[in-house]
Length: 262
Image (cartoon, rainbow, N blue to C red; front, side):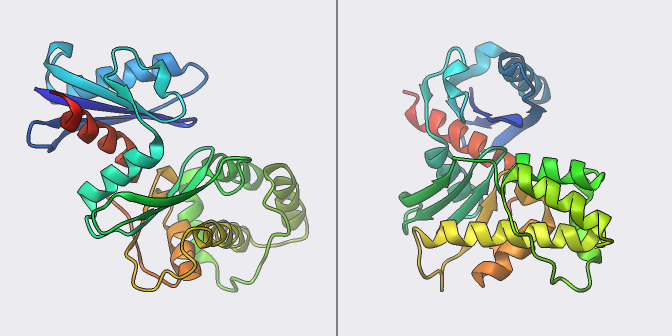
């Protein structure tokens, strides 16, 4: 038997299958788009095909993410906070502080010594510093989202600052900076440092001091090495990133399905 976790977010729908021994046997990430039901179906179909099993083999499904209540046949719908904590506990057991930057919100999660959620804080009021924010900035810079990390590495001065983190105003500011002759690499580095400063403020709400805490990042933005480096510098701590950071929530959901079944 296998257990399915589905994390339906604003940018992607992630699915993970684990077996009886809680080992990952398949994972899939598909764009959410405007039709999240289609994304859920595609993610589910993708992991089943990758694992070479059919629906009958799925003993239980747990859904998470903002669209979790749209997943049919679920055993339970569980919050992202709980699922990301459970997922990172399996991947990086010593983690005490998890920063999750997704498509439309950011979270800081403080874990106790057993990997359980002790405290958390969320930025869910606007898209500042999230995947949506970076998408908008990439459009303004006329570069690919996947190229931001490499552009960050090319920055040499690293002193440019942005006055606004509002997506609309920041995009206008980026256009103005380009018109004034600012280097794209320096703008990207400034964007990443601005995200890191916002993340640091979020972390301080639950952990005024992070000395001695093992820190990890999850979510699709964690694939951007420039953001990870900036967050590490802002917190003064090395930040670990799982191999597939955008599937951490889905993994946690799959593990919870395994634990709750029967």
